[in-house]
Amino acid sequence: MSTNIFSGKRFQLLVKQHFIHNAQFLLLSSGAYVGVIFIVLSVVQVGNGLEPHRLEIFQGFLIGFVTVFGILYVGHSFPAFRSKESAISYLMLPASALEKFLFEFVSRIGIILLTLPLLFWITYHLQGYFFALFTDQIFKSVGLQYLIKIDDDVPGLVYWLTSGGVLFALSLAFTGAAMFTKQPLVKSLFAVAMIVMFFGGYSYIIIEHVGVGRYNPPDTLLLIPTEEETALRFFTLAFFAASAVMLFVAYCKLKEREV
Image 1 (tube, rainbow, N blue to C red):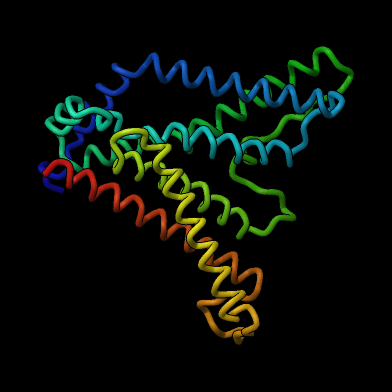
Image 2 (image 1 turned 90 degrees about the horizontal axis):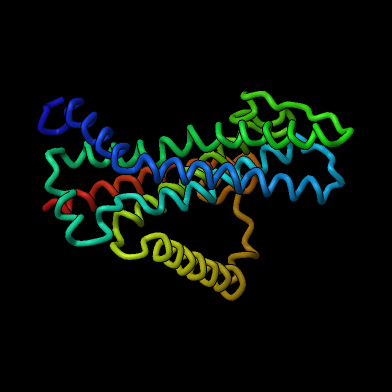
């Protein structure tokens, strides 16, 4: 690949610059994330009569914490775009648009998907063993494999659907941060809410007033999934395809700002 498009040395300089300027913020954010997890898990355990958390609770909280905190963090991608002066300095950096985009993607979405689950796993066990010291309950550890593995009774498609949904939420926040200058996360959430409301109202009109709800399509019609497994596959593909589109839009927006 041409060095005008991507250079490993320039990419390393971007990484080094980021961690030099944001080391304190990253440490404080990690501490806040761990603290919130510890408090929430403790409150829930007290509410359950000090009974240790089960695997279902572990995975439920895992998805919830990674999604919520991931959106909060990813929603502030491209921080240099928050002001005109910093945006000019950022766009003038000796790095290509692809390098800047890949760096933001890796430092935001990539790190989130790797570090947040691992930090949750560590905090979950610290909280569990801490409560075990003061109660008669026995805390059972959860293997690292359950960060990506769902219970055997749950279909594998549910795992892919969940992963696609989380990736889509993060990609949407990432794209909003690239598009909006001020309050990107708030504006992104508002735009999503308006789209959902419009789609909901449109669907209600089509189904109830037009009478589409009374139409029984044949099982061979691929665009209207009628079986559970087919529906899961349809929405899983839709999530991953929409994520790819969102990321492409973010890259195009970065290219547009450089021009």
